[in-house]
Image (cartoon, rainbow, N blue to C red):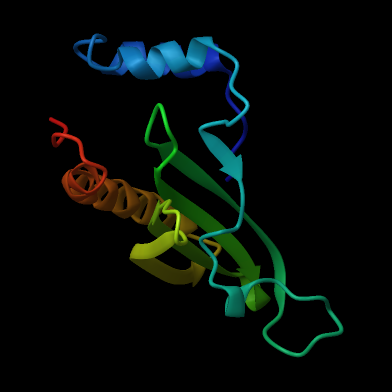
Length: 163
């Protein structure tokens, strides 16, 4: 399985084909049309806990042959005073094993120092064979947790809950 980049035009077409009312998604569609110094999704392995990150071959610890991941950043606008991050990553381990990670964090920016909170985390190991259903399950679980946390996030950032 490979996760590749998609163009704003591809994302726009995907949204327009799958939503009943594009008016609700107009903010996302507008964002896709303008260049942004802060992309919505970034390649990062943030979902992997530091103690499980890939190490140099000369260092002791578990052998992690490869790892990759993505994170989606949702910022409070117009001021980035509150940020929600949903991230997922995969690691290739010995004997054809994969470890999948997913995490949701929030960060509240304050003058006395930022407050970072981990809201949810999951980790699953599986064999490479049959991993597609496990990946689908982890990503579905991540999406469900974002939906579950959204009203809490809206309240914390001082906005009316989304519908």
